[in-house]
Length: 90
Image 1 (cartoon, helix red, strand yellow):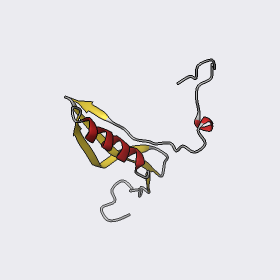
Image 2: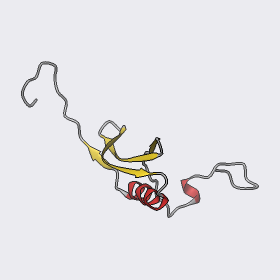
Image 3: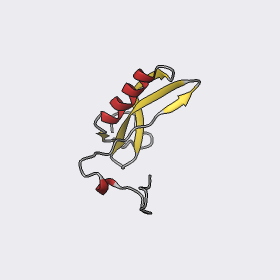
Image 4: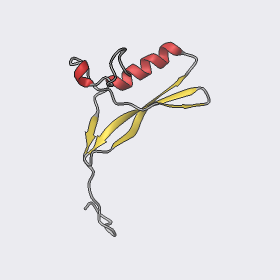
């Protein structure tokens, strides 16, 4: 988004009281799927349950699902390494 009369894009510094909302939304056959996003120890983000499933025609529920997903705290997960051939907890 570019402000009128200014050629630079807006950034987080333009809105000091705002927070970054990270969420994903998928649309298929007029159904919106909004999963929870978690951050792995490696820094990657992945989608996990719970997933809000909302018909696009129901705009109130769709808006609520998007706001809920954006308002959820991004969780962090530690992944345990497993060695090849390990059959017990490694």
